[in-house]
Image (cartoon, rainbow, N blue to C red; front, side, top):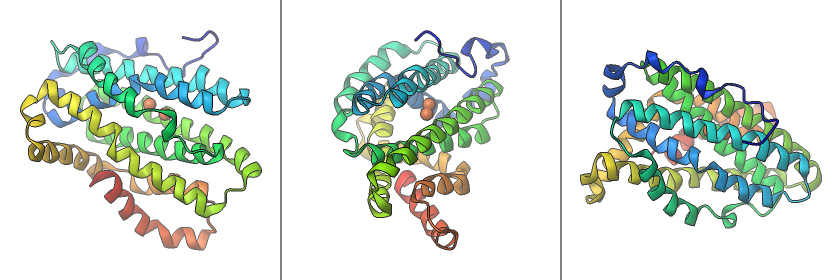
Length: 273
Ligand SMILES: [Fe+2]
Ligand SMILES: [Fe+2]
């Protein structure tokens, strides 16, 4: 960990003696979802490297990315992995993660970044909206005390990440003048990607260990993934999600109110179909 990084909470402060195995095991889909999330969070250093390169010559953004954001995301990965080890004794998390990472690093390249730096910051707002909504949904869904505590911390971190990316986005927008249509395009592209790549790769690797029969059967795999996305959808804080997604567009209040409902439905369809 970089020196001088002050994490808002520490994994060591989580009291795992409160872990309730009966409550955890009552929801197999949730265990798979947490495991998939632990993989993606633990691959954050790869994203950070690409992003830090993208913001060459901007030490404010680069320092925040490397010293704060990356450290917090990696802690999310460690915390969720610790939880998975409690809920799934005997699971070789390290080996499963190595398999996931080998595939993930090939799709997680700088080519996926928006060329204009301001637009990439708007796209990062979409990703942080997704994670803030995901962990809030899990926080609502779970009755397991350790997971409730963990996701409480993580969702607050994700909202704070959003506000940092949004702040930097405003600075770049002043210089780049991308305008609403270009920003909308960047938001839409990233929204589509969230559902298509990272989540599916991670779930496929989780299923390979927990339900290997699913990976040999594309229909069963699609059904199991869809059940997991439904789990998120049931608890999705839709109003918060759409408000965060729309913010970079800076719409006049009347238009904002008009597009909120259709955009909520579109978000659900894109991310959670
Ligand atoms: Fe995270
Ligand atoms: Fe985040």
